[in-house]
Image (cartoon, rainbow, N blue to C red; front, side, top):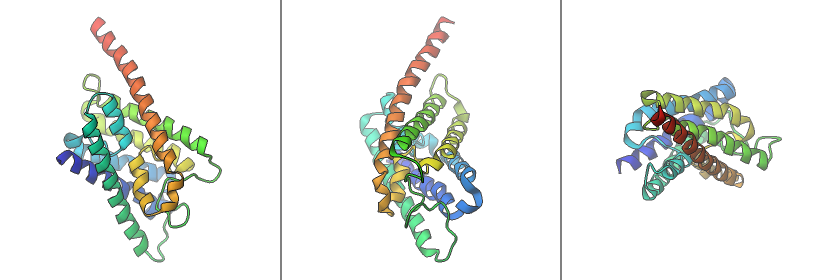
Length: 232
């Protein structure tokens, strides 16, 4: 239960603080600032709950970890449920702040009554967003798998690499669809801004495809690395 609680609380803070940076401070910090905030929040969470649950706080990461054989299917389902609940709670807190700030200069709000939700930005198409989500998740999950690999991982620096990776993909992806690479991050704000559910399928399909490709790629790469180590 401690793992599930950690995942729920961690995902709640990811939505509240990272998405909150867009909603509460978007005009002041811009895309670079929002991307940095996503990365910094995840770095903090990695070193806070990493030793408890691994700090997935992302169904795509949990899917990849399960496919990699590092956790059971039952545990993966528990993680995803906890992440979705935590994201909804984070979205609720963000919605509360949004509704209580009458006259406040909110930023990062796309569409009517939207809380930094993942929706297509002007000029972006569904196909463009789907490819972007798949590729950015591929990159991000590869970092997670590599940094946390027991044989070739980054050790104590894993959380730093993972957080920087999330920040980078957000800087690239925000102009397309506010960047998801995390179905839970998309789900939480969308619960309180139902109009965002029209594009929600992209934020599920894209990251899942990216996670699967990342697992296949990492297995091929890490297998080669381990083979070289044995031969050396």
